Length: 355
Image (cartoon, rainbow, N blue to C red; front, side, top):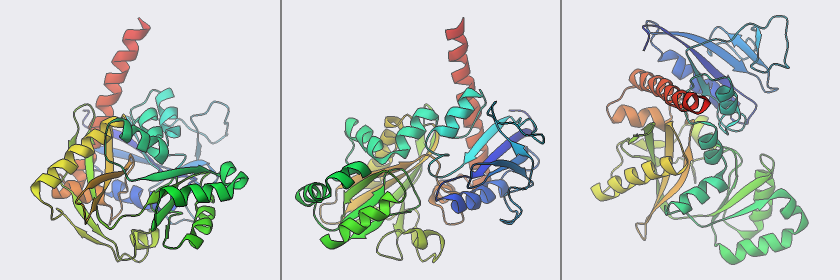
């Protein structure tokens, strides 16, 4: 690696997780060693315009005032300048940043970037596709139903009847392509199901209705490319009925136990499942895995994978690696090295194909 690298941080974005992205970008920015990295910060506003700013720490009214940038040849601006760097880091949670769209753009531009590629990002973002990949790999997943908005509008009674036949209360209703617990409702009575589905449809045309469990919730972190490693497990103790957006970022009542208090065999199994899930979704760089441990049966379920986990003050991904012996600044270094390694490997393959 060169003695000094230029790193571009992309943050903000058009999704409902816009504010979380800004907070994550600030934490990454603060942990980039200025002796090793020159950081360029690119803010993407809620309308999709890109502007270079001094840092993610600017106030909301000052973000977006910098010169306009675009990779797209059909976008022109008199003040546009070349956006060049050694590594690009999308810190964009949700659609438009975590779903393979910006990853595809970066791959077309043939530049190194942190995190999963286009395929891994797209599969991991869509909860239906993600769970199908888990199922194909033989990973234990919670019972669920998938509903698309046209189907719900056309045959709402049939949809509700199907859900009542196959699942039992309580249920969790969530958008298929979003994170940070945005748009999620816990349904404890059947009369709440219809309104909960309408809430989820505000954020996505496809939603999941998942079987609720009496369980403990754990998270694990994965780091690497072809030979990934898993962190220690951490337990989440929600301050509310479940780990809501408000609980995560506003009320901050959530408790964390890191490392989680688990039998050694259960912790080892969770780490193995984390690596299997990472591989099942063709991930690279980083991912956070969510698990459920059912209290009565002691069964362990893989819930979700997140390819651009949060890097906020309460985010589990950096906490888990710190507890595993890799502090935040060293974690940033590793992620940048993994991005460069992945790009070199992919470029060698492309060059061989082109000969």
